[in-house]
Image (cartoon, rainbow, N blue to C red; front, side):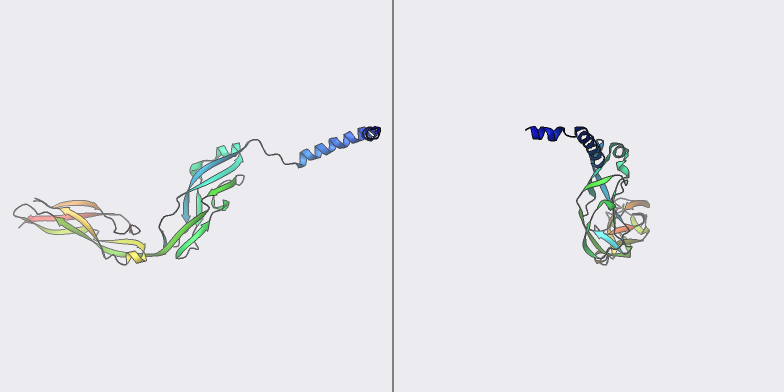
Length: 220
């Protein structure tokens, strides 16, 4: 017992100094997590960029991406969520279904913010070839003008519009139909502004989707 006591007390001051320096060194080399660190969840819009001009996406695509960000309180609180987004570059996309993995580089956050989670991490994109085509706009009349009157002429402006969509769907569309104008008991000429659409969900109209239909009514 006396041996251990002498061992402990021998050069005690030197041992205390050594312990002090060891503790000081540990303090400086051991990382300490900052107390003001925050982790915040956001739901951000997905932006598809640089889609090739001869291609388009079809089918359902995840429009909102959940992300968890980590950083200092001051930096996190200064973030404007409306300016955050998740972007996916499709400049090298090809026809068919492909899966893209999202990583922190896809999110426009400051360099001192860490992205600790992305959900979903994988996005499915279905690309098809794009086709444009000019088609006629056709109008159907319903009812009959007043007795002694007739529809002399119908004109549509513009009479031809351009549609765009998947090649397989556009090629089967020769005209846009389904526009109906009621002329029941009409005695005078009139005009109607009519909104038009396409028969296929993935086919869209290039330019305005409204036409002016002029119906000329005259005595028979």
